[in-house]
Length: 172
Image (tube, rainbow, N blue to C red):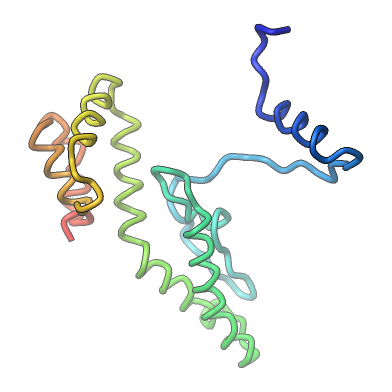
């Protein structure tokens, strides 16, 4: 019927049927992107966890392809020497996790904190925040500068932002 909404799966099935006649689906895998914070341990004996499996996606946008690819590069930089030495222990693979956390850890934690603040906001406060952000030169501002600009216009958000401020994550 015309009034019934078409699901994403139905659109995909139609597209595949139209553009790939005679093709068959081998399996279907779907799910959400984890945006709850990076897992506590990215390596163990003989195993390196990267990308969505390690919850490395951006907590605000759920974008993870570039972070996953950089994570894979960092994992390779740790795994190749470990394999060459014949030592794939967690200790030998840990340089990957240390490198990822050094490069992205603080940013990821700050974005996760921002996500938590946004999800607790009322629609009215969120709309005001978006209007304020739309008037800022965001591309040339650090997260800390953006936060200060928003808080100066919306001081009621100060309590929500205390985690970001007290940890110093956005002031660097």
